[in-house]
Every structure is written in C-alpha cells, then in structure tokens.
Amino acid sequence: MMHIPARVVRAERENERVVSLTFDVKLNGAPGQFIMVWLPGFDEKPYSLAGASPLKITVGARGSFSTKLCSLKKGERAWVRGPYGRGFELLGKKILLVGGGYGFAPLRFLAAEAKKRGIHAVAICGARTKSLLLKPAACKTIFSTDDGSFGIKGSAIVAMEELFKKERFDVVYACGPEKMMEAVARLAKKHRAGCQLLLERYIKCAIGVCGHCACGDKLVCFDGPRFGYEMLANPEFGKIWRDKAGRKVQL
Ligand SMILES: Cc1cc2nc3c(=O)[nH]c(=O)nc-3n(C[C@H](O)[C@H](O)[C@H](O)COP(=O)(O)OP(=O)(O)OC[C@H]3O[C@@H](n4cnc5c(N)ncnc54)[C@H](O)[C@@H]3O)c2cc1C
Ligand code: FES
Image (cartoon, rainbow, N blue to C red):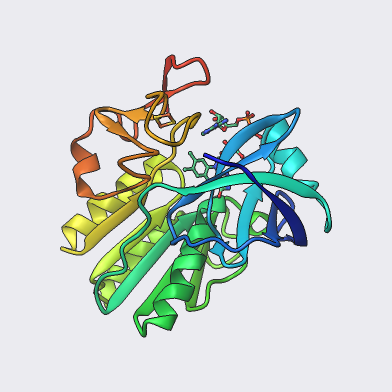
C-alpha cells in the first residue's frame, strides 16, 4: 500500500489525446496488471502497465485528473503504488491481441513479452478515427478506424472477423470498451479460441477491501482485471458500471 515517488524520464505524445509516460522506477509487474497513480492535491486513479521495468503508462486525456497526468513533463513527479491484480497469462503458440483506444497500450506490453518467449502474435488496434490511433505493437499490427480514415473501415471486431476467415489463433486477448470486449469474447468462442479480457470498474482501494469495483460477484481489482469467458454469464458485464458514489449506471 506504500506509495513510491516516480519521476517522469520520458513523455511521449501518441496522438492528440494520449500520452505515454516513462518513469525512473522499475516494478516487477506483468501485462494486464495495473498501478494506482497519485497526484497529491488531485486524486488517485488506476492505470494499466504499458511497461514495468522501467514503469510506463499510457494515458488518454478525459477528465481533470487524466488531463493533469498527460501534462506531466520530464523531471516532474507522481506517486505510485502497485502493481495490482491478475495480469494476462501468455498461452498458446499463436495469439491475437485486440485493443480499442488506450486499451491497446497494455496489449503492446503483452506483444513485447510474447516476442521474448517466441510466441507469434498479431495485433488489431482500433479507434474512431486516424488521429486517435496508438503506435503499433512489436508484432504485425492491423489498424481499423470507424470512419475508414486509416486501415480497415469499421470497428476492431470487423478486422477480427476478416482475420478469422483466413487464420486461426489459440488465444485472443482484448482490452478496450466493454461492448467491444463482449463481441470479442463471443467471436473467439465461435472460433474455439481461448479468451482473456481486461475489465475496468471504478477503483478506489485496489486491494479488494472497499467493494467499489464489483462487476456482479467479482471484484475487478482483486479477482481481475483479467477475466475469461465466464464474464459472458456475468449479469453486469457489458451492461452495468458503478459511478464514483457506488450507484449503478447503464454502460
Ligand atoms: C484497471 C484499470 C486500468 C486502467 N488503465 C488505464 C490506462 O492504461 N489508460 C487510461 O487512460 N485510463 C485507464 N483507466 C481509466 C483511468 O483510471 C481513469 O478513469 C481515466 O484516466 C479518466 O480519469 P479522469 O479522472 O481524468 O476522468 P473523469 O472525468 O473523472 O472520468 C472519466 C471516466 O473514467 C471513470 N473513472 C474515473 N475515476 C475512476 C477510477 N478511480 N477508476 C476507474 N474508472 C474511473 C469515470 O467513471 C468516467 O467514466 C483504467 C481504469 C482501470 C479500472
Ligand atoms: S477497488 Fe476496492 S475492492 Fe476493488
């Protein structure tokens, strides 16, 4: 639970909304795990590991906290604790990584680990438009945009359907909007591939105590954030989210 200081050594703009920050800290963490980032006087929020040694996170500017985080410059400091949660398990000989928005960042970390272990990976990076795409992973990367401004026209699911017509994969790994991950899981199941999904819920304690991150009977911070097909039977997956006050809201 102890925070450690982390100084920015590199701030790299990925696109008009997303920045990757590398810190002078080395963690023993795996792709799919997350850390809590604290900016004193602002707030503390969870971010997936985009790299562990050195620590790297990829942040999309949305509200005030993430916008402040994105504005950190080389030499400036945040405080971090973690890593937390169950990360991805690298299985199989040939894997497919499907990411939407900043959700592609932990998959790039996974692609780098797969390369080290000699596992063949193909990645799909999806976004609404070209200016919101992230940089490619350390493997063949197929891009898709909803408006057709770059790569395949349509969602990451359209790209995944195209790919499955030609190739088979042992396991599909996904991170991005929950509706997208639901479709990924159904498609992977249809093609008899394994499936690992990285879920998000409102995280406060990150250690399985407060219950704020519940998705049905699962705690995302403690039981996840990596889940498998069992999520398709979870009544809240793809449907319900809890807001800051713990109230249920429709996704
Ligand atoms: C396990 C996990 C990993 C994440 N990894 C990344 C990442 O790699 N990159 C990235 O840009 N974002 C990531 N997020 C989302 C991130 O924690 C923030 O929610 C996001 O940066 C917006 O924060 P904000 O305060 O600027 O925006 P706000 O305007 O306050 O919120 C925007 C949205 O973020 C949600 N949110 C706000 N606070 C939290 C919180 N404490 N926990 C979960 N969701 C919250 C809100 O419900 C809202 O839907 C992750 C979330 C989780 C749960
Ligand atoms: S955030 Fe407190 S139990 Fe998960």
